[in-house]
Image 1 (cartoon, rainbow, N blue to C red):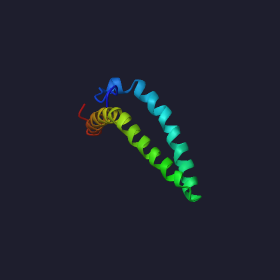
Image 2 (cartoon, rainbow, N blue to C red; image 1 turned 90 degrees about the vertical axis):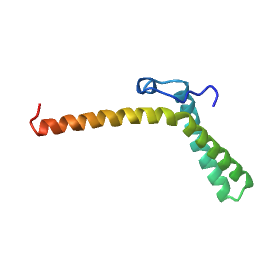
Image 3 (tube, rainbow, N blue to C red; image 1 turned 135 degrees about the vertical axis):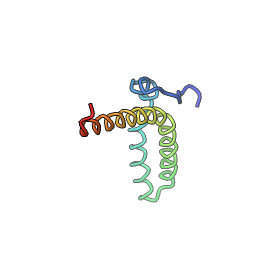
Image 4 (cartoon, one colour; image 1 turned 45 degrees about the vertical axis):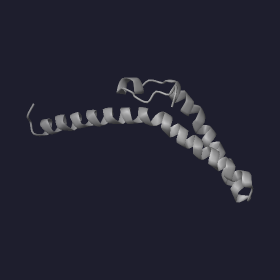
Amino acid sequence: MKGIKTRWSPEEADLWTKEDYLTFVISPLIYFLLALGGIWCLLLRWYGWVVLGVSGLLIWLMIKIIDPKLRALSHDYEKKQKQFLEELEKIERWEN
């Protein structure tokens, strides 16, 4: 998507950017639309399905925006955890 960064270093991903603010705004809107669409669907209103469809598109958009940042942070965390566990095993074996 144009204007949305998709490649992040762990340090960059840890900072708040326009992508974070955009998902910060979209997220509550999605919850509201899901609740409203669900209520309207239960009341058998046709526009309830439209609202649910729009909220589904917003969920997809939010995932496309924030997922690259989350993946970068996750990979960095996995590396740090692996190093920590290796260090912990050395300490347990008294290998300093």
